[in-house]
Image 1 (cartoon, rainbow, N blue to C red):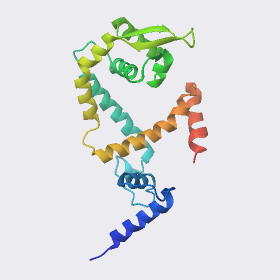
Image 2 (tube, rainbow, N blue to C red):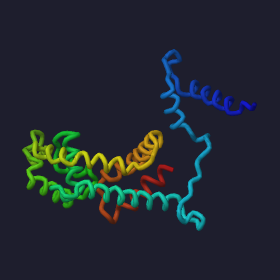
Image 3 (spheres, one colour):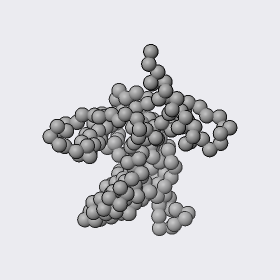
Image 4 (spheres, one colour):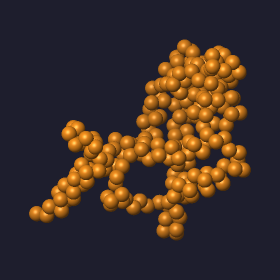
Length: 222
């Protein structure tokens, strides 16, 4: 019997102990080891996935961009089905309500930016929610020029009526991924969000956005 795998695992554990443990007497669990492996897996065999057009030289960046767009459209179609027959007009309406319920009251611009929308479109959504009586606004104590938006009891009830279907939609979107695959995907998507968020927060115009994102954030970080 060959013990190459066992030796490799022992060597990996040794690296883990040498590189990651500051307090040698601190208790360490398997979760700590797994997290370390995920963060330091550059020496592990890398998967070599296939994608449409790869054999013709299509780049992984092109494939990734297309896949993200496709997944967004699939998610929107499930969300549209989840609100069919309800008082909701768009998925953005219940997403705004979910954000308000989860994070509490916030200004209009905070709510719009949290959902990565342009101001005119976000204001339209907020106005529809106000018309439905699902949110209310009050003067901000910190800035009298600003309004704080909060979810109302009617908004909570509207959410609850659709929440079962909304949960079904979110479950379907994650498809047949295993728990570990979901955790890995969340980690990678969070990494992408962390890259794009500071660019978005600069509120760059359309003519500047690509140039700044590409040269100032992508090229300079490599």
